[in-house]
Length: 459
Image (cartoon, rainbow, N blue to C red; front, side, top):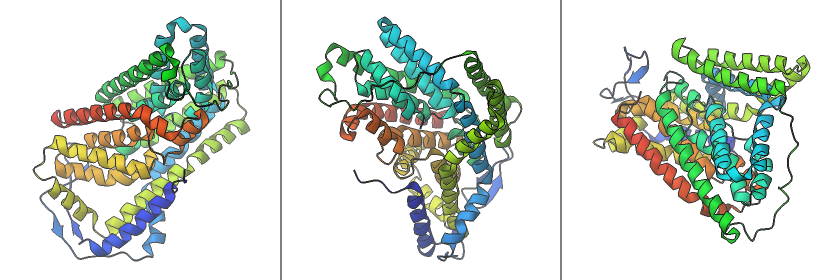
């Protein structure tokens, strides 16, 4: 399969397109006001007017990225510091050891296979929901594939446990700092707000996903020939990964991680924490992780720098994505685009308008698989658009969350998706044949939750 263009190349092309659009789309603007109830800057939907055109030159292609970086500096800093802090925690291999311990229990107690399978899916879903487990699944499938085969399942089940489990949690997340909180910050929605509804969504997403995987696993256990990969030769991925001792210090770190998440929820709800405070909390967690595991100063900082460097592509995507809005804002075409979309949706019930936002986000996800990058690209438009359409910004964030997370399970432009399939030796067409029913089911579920969100004025 031909390699898809890099996300930065796609965003750069979009910048050029928007420069061209400033020459084609008439300039216009809404009057923005401060909502006295929330303190947010919102659009007054009845104040649109056309203004003098201000087309952008090719020079803006070279100047807009730095402007975008400056405007996104707080979020970019957040990504770097949280990514670095998680890398310090991961250097201790505490999470690896805890999951390996559970996987060993599953292997030793095969009479509880279905229950253990569901528990594993639940835990990976929780990981996807709380700290955005994504690339890490590439490590865990090296454990779960041989585990699944030892339980008379196949490589699809082995790959699905961490990948689809974490993916369902990612799409139905209730506190993911790399997607929800970035999107909420851009949309000027209180961070970690709307938690109760999101927890319900996450639970339903996880239950549907668990049922889907277990149903397939039970089917092929009874008749192995029903496996979609029955005739595919193994590529050696049954070899277990390095065993990590789940010692006292690693157990203490797992408990510290749970405590950190609890503090995050309490701080946001009761102490008005925002991006700086949350980043500080994770930095403190990284420091405590290094102290508990007795990492040397050099080793801790090396881990932090490695983690932060891994966030560089996401940070650049955030900056470049924001620069698209810089071009559009300088050309005064953002409000004209919003006005045109609002006119198209004029008279359409909000429960239908929000479905359009969901599928637009899903379409964009095909080209921009980065969750944080997609948030930076779309939320500056989707948030004010939701004001115009009479949809709460919290619901707009939810539409972004579904569109970004759900389709990560199938898009060939995602390096994680294709990496998982490569390691598991599952052809892409067979993967689609297996997972499409789950994606459709979760899409319909998402549409229902979005419709309910508009009815209850989710905020």
